[in-house]
Length: 236
Length: 236
Image (spheres, rainbow over the protein chains, first blue to last red):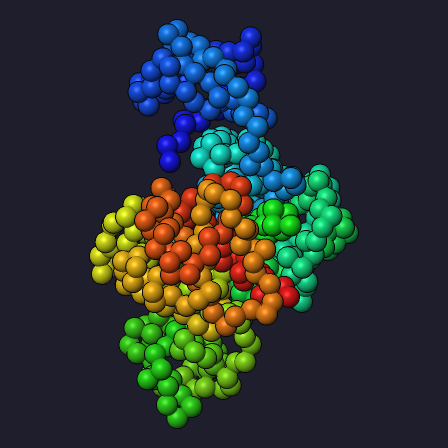
């Protein structure tokens, strides 16, 4: 099946039923992709999608129709992740495909790495690419890394703390309709949360949950948790 | 929590309540990990686990007890995957963590890459490492790459064909108790299965299923499908 090219635009590029294409976008569309006047593409501004057509003026694409196909989950999932040592780029890409709405990197006691601004910009770029490839309407937000207590206080409830060890109910068992409009999932670092961090989460109303009997790495557990929430709301 | 070191052994290294350690294992345990006589470890032969203790003779570890903790899924999942261009190593590692029992790389029409024997040996090594790290009792089998029709015929039923497009029931909706002792999941290549391949799967009794509204990459879809089966059987 031929897929139309998808292009991310800023909301202020839209006016009078047309898109003003930036110079880098023109270069990408006409030089890299070799598109021409008359070719169509899908433009996304993070909220909506349009079918658009390139014009003789390379600075312009005409909006043809708004696309109503909704591939977004009806639940906004916030993912709190203790920064893994490696693999965060793949995690951002795959979490975006599965349907995450917001990623909050957490500076936990066992993962104090504070990533550079360049790294954070790179994550945003990966989320944008992955949103296009997976045909989403939203590009997930990626917040700046923040301390655990700040992240706990800001994340929407209900909220679940995924723990590799301990006797907790399985996350899937707790996901029953009616579903809330939003929820949060917190996934620990390689070494697990510290006792203090678990206590802080409990005080903030987080429900500890299991993701199964096997020990998942810090880059795998978030994908499993997201997949379960996405499937629970889409399969019912 | 301190974790005991896990060591994979061959069944023929076990006799008379002790393990005969190979020279590379001795090097790894005594030189790399700096263990000493009296230190304990977990030995796994792919079927069972034992607590064992290093002895004054570096070629020997004494079996102390069989570990009965079972972290294995009560369902044996066979994963048929069209060879992705890249990312198969991560996929083997993560599928092992989530609990796959057997991986069958498939030579589909849109992914004809035939991997080298070195690559296949590397996958086995990754599966072994991941089984140790995720505290499993089984090391997943990884079969040699095979044509689609052979793979279809050999895989246990019930079997599900995951398709990114089309109106199919969600996999999670079909996963209801009582669960069979085994099942198969087939995941397509980047470009999707061809019409012919879909028809062959239908003829072999495969049920087409959806994994949700977003388009998942060939390395992400298997993790989502596995996570759903694992959670369905462990959460009920």
